[in-house]
Image (tube, rainbow, N blue to C red; front, side, top):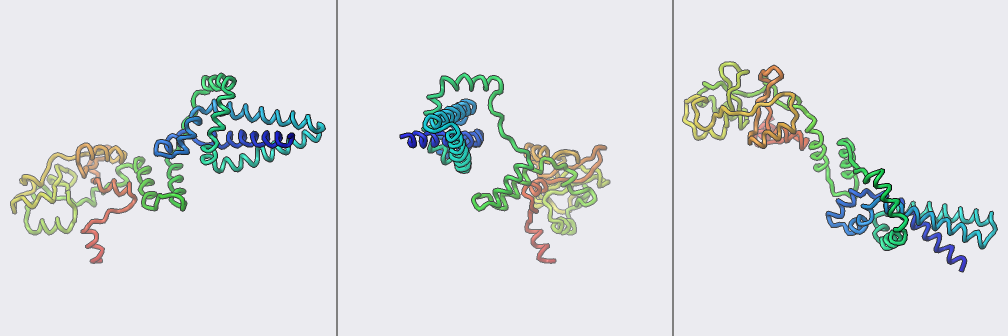
Length: 324
């Protein structure tokens, strides 16, 4: 009978010790997210894990009570030195090390299947642990949410992509990394500089040479300037040239030329520019420097390429590659 009681006490000690480490190592926010997405084990555990201080007080009280009882019981059936050594060995090995090592590794699975034990312990210890937990809540507040820096999130995504147990693939990893990085980038890092911009003067006539040049450049939107290439006055939409009369100037077109265009600073952040483009439904913006001088252009495609971390190749690009 003495051995049976000792065995029960050791098992209880192991449960309390293992669940203390296992359940409290589970992040409450992560459990809430998993529960929201239908994880049954997370839903079961979150119901008790969300009251962290109450759970902590209960498991620690139970563990101390069981270990004390085990030491006293062994002292009553054996000599003081033998009881002390036996109690220490049983508690350390089977009441602490083994259960903590096992349960911490399978905390979700084990915690969900022993939730009845945890709930029972909470009910039994409630008169003592409730005031303790409330005191802790008052002085310490609720648990601090676990947040990650962007570099940490990127590292987590990379680790998931490398794991055979994760559904995240290489393309998703690349896109998430790009989405986390692009908001820190400035327009000047992505834009096409003024010297490299393909543009036309407003008095350029819509003749054969013009259409040949437009076709060769391969762009759907082109800046239009007045006399000086730094004096941008509008944007020409190539797709609308099809409805225009021949041999008229760009400035005289009805549909193709638009004098209203988006202007951004070269120091602007890409996420801010993307938001403005989406709100104004503009796919291209004229870039100005801090002195309000024309610096270049940036397109929606340029920003998207930074997000997906890959160049967008269209039909004209493919044809050029095949020619080369």
